Length: 461
RNA sequence: UCCCCGGUAGCUCAGUCGGUAGAGCGGGUGACUGUUAAUCACUAGGUCGGCAGUUCGAGCCUGUCCCGGGGAGCCA
Image 1: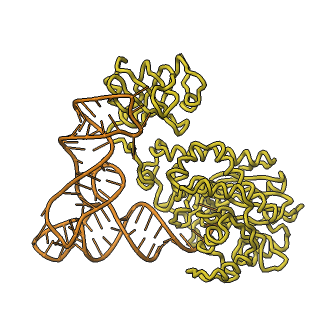
Image 2: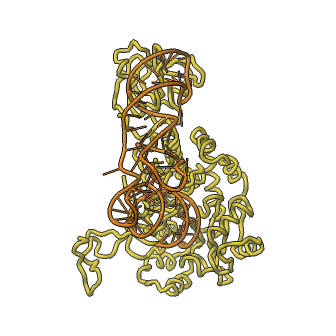
Image 3: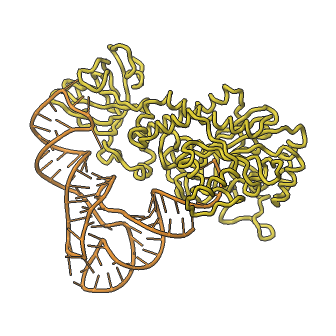
């Protein structure tokens, strides 16, 4: 019995082969006079392999009735194609039907809308565009580890379930085993002591606080895992469940952080251009005509580094009419970020040193006492792709900040301990993996770069 | 959550003034053919998102709900 060959191997073959075995799904079949052409795809690459089926094989009448979507096993010879358009093709000796696809198979030999394909998320990876983005997603996941491992960062598995209220990065999903139809109460409120963990539990909105503790022991570390936010966001850039990468560097400041952010994005884009060239071509051709020049631009130029105060000046002097006023102390709105990245600089921009009042408690206070060492990396079309900062490593200042925000200091005891014992300057950032995939592919809706998107009112599949 | 747009055949869409449903693709049948999302002919296929209302009559007008898209807020 010969071993199955993946189609990617056969298409890249150097010589003909007497005996090959391929398995896959039929993309299209064209019947000719004495034989039939089948385009077969097994997901190993974007391209199909052409199968020639002569009408003298046993079950020819059944084979020619197979439609788009059916699965088959083909054994035959790999030969140079007599036709134009492909180098290799398989001349079948025998074909076994694995699974037919009745005529209500939802995917057709034509372009479907992304909205429709989203309603058949269990079948959309069988389409060219979606198989391409999910191969890129896989390659890029690997590249993330490669980047960090090459630089001696350690991967830390921070918890998915966390104790309540210590993360402060967004609305959280509750985790409970309480009977929702009969919730135990104490003094009118939910009695969490009766719950599984004996206290309120949630899904993580960020692994940052946990990973900081490992940063202050293993040195350079990163997390890469799922993250959950229960905000009622209905946009093409938000989901309730997404994957985030959070590096954290010990003995590092904001400059180091910005440098890492730029190198990271450039590395990943370069990796995709080199390792996923075929799949990327599909996006450059059908999804975003400017994709390759956008990616070249990002890879070949240093990102602009712009203090928040200077960003405000540029926006004020732009003469542009914005819906939201530009004012020092207010956060930049989407339209402001887009103006900077898309119109003014036309390349990625790192805005840093934001007013402290619009940023998180753990960000390091600058000497001016008005701003914190925070940075956002803004890219054209997507907006914020990275948000990061140098962390407040000074015990007293961090404690004051927690109290100023009226957080319960007791909840942060272990976080404060890291500043009490051998504290060091450190910095890190969070990068939304799906936003990176959007950047790299030109796909404009975040729901189309994750296998099964979770958004408000949507939990199908 | 707010603003705007949309929901008609399996899919993509058209549907005029309110008068009872159309095309292309896909499916089926046949013809032709080393073809490339093949081509040509014929054919089947519809609770016009749900509910309520206006009207002699609603795909079309009104209300409401559901779903989808774009933008905003929140953020990655």
